[in-house]
Length: 346
Image (cartoon, rainbow, N blue to C red):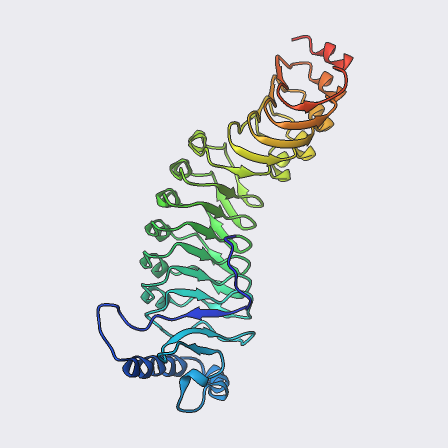
């Protein structure tokens, strides 16, 4: 997830007036107070009752959770742990952070009216239903986090309209269907996380269009087919190899070299028994070479050079009887070359 220094659970920033219009500070204050009251009136009765106990008096700057600047203009609204349903309309919102509350129900189609939104974070709630197609109308959006809810349905194709998107988090929901090809239209995307859903089908070839992508998380779905060759265009990946890649029983080649990858080789990779080529050279990997690689008896090419591996060369490498090429140069390995490498007759 993207990093945000936010010491509270629910925050909404408001921008209630267009910069192309000139208002007096008194007019601005009254306009903003009126907008708050209109929003409150559009909410369910129980929520209106709650806000009426928090928002009283003629000076809205003294209302609970409201902060104003010296001119009396609202700068932010902070409501902690109040169970507000996500309804109503505030067309000037730029940032909508409602994460880690108890929001229920569906995402309203009126969210498409919030044309000025740049960030939406509704993670860790109890939202259900599908993502409304109207969300594709918010062209200024660069962060959308709907993770850890109960959302369902397919990922809408309108997601491709969000050309400014940098961070898209839809993990831990109940989304089904295939990953839409339109995902490849998000050329500005840095981080895409769709794990822990019920997605099926193949990884779309259009993923290779996301040349700015640095993180891609798709595990714990029902995806099938091969990893598209277009993913070779993504040369900005960094981070550790996920252990669950060892569950990829049909994986035959894994080539991630000349990147910013770090961390250890997960020993679980030894379960990917059909792996024939492993190319992890010129990264920042460290730790010991796991002896579990000796289980990859189909392996014929193993390139681990130019990293920070330490310890001994595992004798289990000698079990790779089909191994033709082995490159362990430019590491921090120690100890003797194991005699068992003599069993690699090829």
